[in-house]
Image 1 (tube, rainbow, N blue to C red):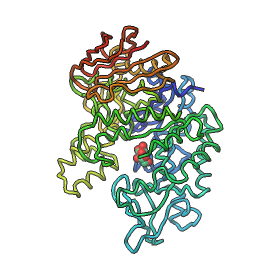
Image 2: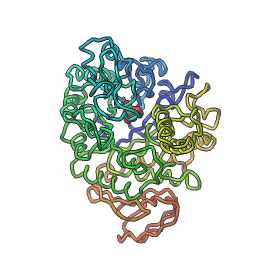
Image 3: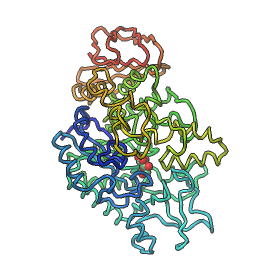
Image 4: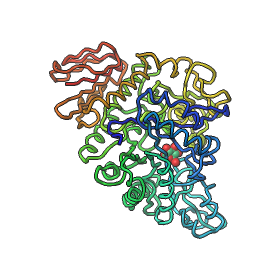
Length: 547
Ligand code: GLC
């Protein structure tokens, strides 16, 4: 089995990756066409975001049929071909399983709406508190109340996300069996990885009004969550030791993650948590503009690294995905130090304890979209909140400034392959605009350049394979309260690796208080980094030292 502690996962958002038929949408054939590029990067797994039949209200996270491929992405033959070609190159596929909810276009929901009691019980229908008042005051994560009224039944159904994404009732054993069958179907196709979407929300707890928050405390990490994950493990992927799994854990607690991703708990291989990506929020509120809090970022990452390690549990480590803005725009510098900061941020994540995830385009330093008009945005969450922000009294300009920083479309723009038309993504009209900087930020110009961001990611992927201290070592934070430095130590079998990063664009002197004479520099984003007890770090400089 590929050892997931030495592995790196590459995430593909097929819609924006590569279009082979000129309709402006990426497709599965496009993934196959680019396998050699992915192989060159050295990664072990490809995580594909959902390509199942879907009305695409939430770009495929609203599944209508889990057993078939959306024609926009291709056919089952295209999938089989992709699986075969990936395997030839030693790359495994990880599929994205969305089981907290289905599209309201799913056959189950349609039958429920038609009044079939069996299928009504697949979802969460409830009476309102009184006429016109939904069962609880919970917010949908995409804005508005989380309940939708169905007149015919005089009842509401729960949708924690879009109104077209109805939450499944996991307390119904039949639902759990359906889910198991879907996982087994894809296992039979040779899939060796699964990512489970917002999976810690599947076990609903108490249906009560929340007067302190948006309702999430009542359904996050719910009462039967560990039981349901153990059951899914036991009945499906747990029967194949080669399969790796990752759970997307929305607003979770670290105590629950010890179990979700504990080596002994028979739930999942690892977890995505998001606390470190809320350091530019106000509490849980994303739609605000506040500078990121560096100290908080360090505290959170250090805490998760240390405690997950103490509890023998495994993290997925990452900055980027299809829901997050681009990290170089978020915590780095897109102007003078674009390349240095992109490499520094990569170093921070890739030397941590956990399995690193690279989101398409991150490996070439892609930036935020820079959209200035609402017509350029496509994401349902962004469009809803653009309206809601203005309803709350913000000016249109203010709403735009917030979208520009936080919109999920920042990372959904087409992959920048070359400096030709549409960045080489499509010969048609791209479904979402290509970022103008593709003229100088593109894959083609970086593949053979040994100083490129791409070449640096390649080195990091290899470093994890070569250095046991990075893949297996324990974690110790350093310079905890330093205002500019992000540093830590990894140790394994008598070897020590020290990772030092200057997170800012100015020169810093840092007394490590360690005799570094026995250490050598094994990686740096400047070619001539010097190793001294007092380190002189240039803007965004990263140094990885080994003894
Ligand atoms: C996850 C996905 C996101 C989606 C949501 C609802 O957070 O990553 O893209 O909108 O779940 O399925």
